[in-house]
Image (tube, rainbow, N blue to C red):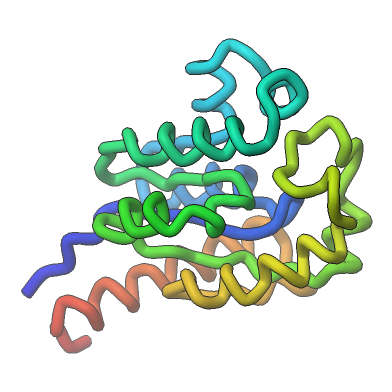
Length: 179
């Protein structure tokens, strides 16, 4: 039986490289690329931080989940916001057609990469530190992931190539084909 999973979802913390790796991976796989944060900004006509500031976190979460739930794409690498793991309905919707890849980046690396955190529209950052969010989200990412990529000491290109290789292996194994 062939796999029905024809999309790739890249999950991870803010600044883990979801969009950067997603674009490289989409090129390697000849897939389209969708950044959910950009999609939300386009559909709502404001930045993520503006939505949070003007409508509140609860409303932002509703918007983010609703926008993810309306996605119906094929052969696409999708980079949702780091908070997607808070929405079981959205995760289940994406899981029906997608292989989930978790970009596992250590906290110290994320912290050094994260610039202007207060302007990024990061869900939960008003009431928690970035470290607390990291500790809260890590088990959720691990639970959702079909493939975990340790990003330590690897270039963007190495990570994208490893992701491509592991996706191909997973698709072959899931379809019952032997190599």
